[in-house]
Image (cartoon, rainbow, N blue to C red; front, top):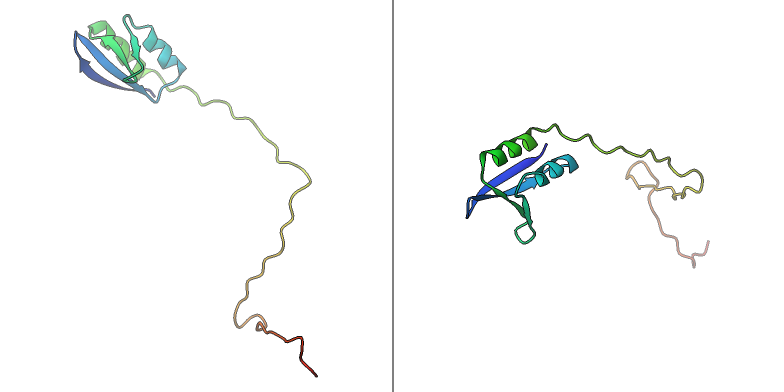
Length: 106
């Protein structure tokens, strides 16, 4: 659902910030008479009239756009990397770790 933030502007206009919107809401906003995009402010400048306010209310009331379709992706078959087995030493359950010298004589 689209969200609008409306701020008063000089010369009988309003600044409108549109968030959480889809293509349908943007097209409806562009159709409002006198709608101008301000790239510096990243806001729309619109005349402050009852018709503009009614059009903005309709944009907010629009049902949310359906989510885009997801693509089904199959996992890659074969050539799966092999992992070396991992063993964690557990005291009391595993044999103690010992070092033997190569120079031991028996």
